[in-house]
Length: 423
Image (cartoon, rainbow, N blue to C red):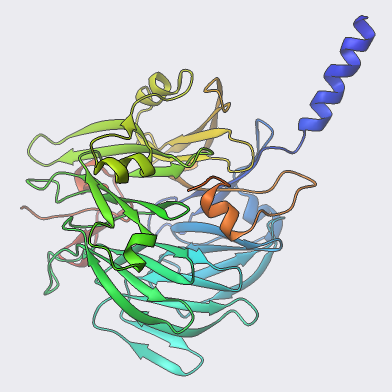
């Protein structure tokens, strides 16, 4: 009997091998050229410099987003190095695109990659395009060249692909120096023609950070102005927006600084509200059901019912910097940036919220991508997006939206639209 039990345990363990495969982007410190990739598999950190191990070269300065395009290709924006780095799922460098300066966030339809940029120019196959505001670039993954662009709002951030359209959240984050205000709009672009269809005014300023997508629904963070305009979350219904409905979004009083999509189609969000009046953070930890939020116009659909010990565990984190649910397995991850200047940490929970461990990673661990379990195929864009479910002061902040007073001794600060060094 004991031998049979042992054989069963070994069989289960063998079946589970390779089920958790996580790529984690560590931003490092701005202008230090020390962005790194952590590769995590089956409860262990395999490497905290995976890209360098595989390719014998640096990743670059301030990696800012990561997305899987198809079975064989992954894209990474490396913001301060001004490149989009393409790699294979085994970490091997494939190509770089260098024509999109100040690149930010990524979306894909499986044939093209779409990148938001704070910049005002872009190299394309037709020559240089210039812009008054920010833009989105369309990259052909056959040639890794920019084939088209579309101007949107000032300093565009999060971007999502849905039913042939791109939804782009605009921040206006350089408003303190440049001659414009904070943005409040979501731009909608026809992905095929790269023409701007319309802008939806949410009434919420500074739509900053990576947005989360659950089918037709988007979770968009608005950190406010760190003074009198409080942080909020916009739940956005893409179908209603495409149909021309005025009721295509609902504003919630919670922040969603770091958010992700859960297996049930809900959003898990950690909100970090900072006030220059108190020089303190206030955090919220919520699960958002976007369907219920839209049905009740914000009267319901938000709760703190996190699985297992997650809520208490998250509240114990020094400085939350990311949260993620593996779309293939349901395992849950979060990161702690600590002091922002030294090694951070990666935490892991089972789908039931059982805490499984804390692992040392690199500086400012922020952006996640789960690879398919060994022997499984990439689920594809549509399934991944919808998880298979139905449907006044100086105004300084860094590339992650952190107020300057809370950042490490050396970093990038956006002050009145200019980059300022602090030593």
